Length: 72
Image: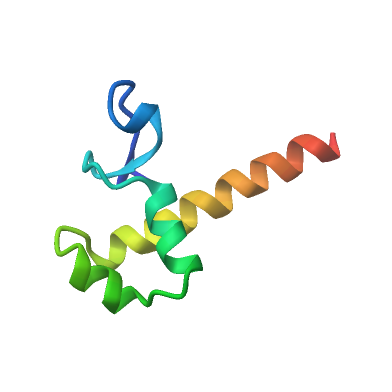
């Protein structure tokens, strides 16, 4: 998870990939719109496949935390 960073002044404090101005939300939106990993990497050469996997892992963990809180 060290690929996902939080900086209060950057992108409204949203989680971003490796201190870039590309947020977790941006990558998730691209994936959910149907873009493939190679298409995202072509459009954003500063990203790596490991960054995209980190975004997915971050989102999965966040979802797990929300579901766990609701169950308590």
